[in-house]
Length: 139
Image 1 (spheres, rainbow, N blue to C red):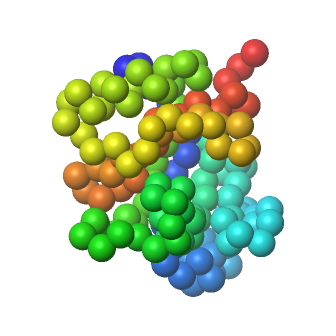
Image 2: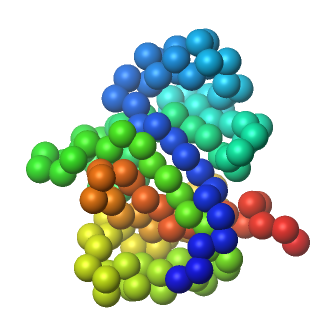
């Protein structure tokens, strides 16, 4: 697998309101909620292509199809996504991760916003995405 760049970093927030107070009100980051989901993000922070505050409920839904994080699994504090060079590289990356003994949370899939992503949980408890977002690539 060849990683092209880090595409996204997001603290995972059990309390999105408290987290937004820190990141937006205190630190002054230009995070914006684009809908009523509670996810706030920006692509205007130097050093990262996408910075978000991801509600834990949404992370659970994205990884497990339910609104609560499963008992017995470490509750993640953040997610990081690594971008591959081509959309077709995500599924083979999943197989490589499995072959190396990593517990993949879900296979490669196309999200409604056009990103192809698969996720696993790292030994530290982070949600790690292997993704391809077409708008983050030149040409």
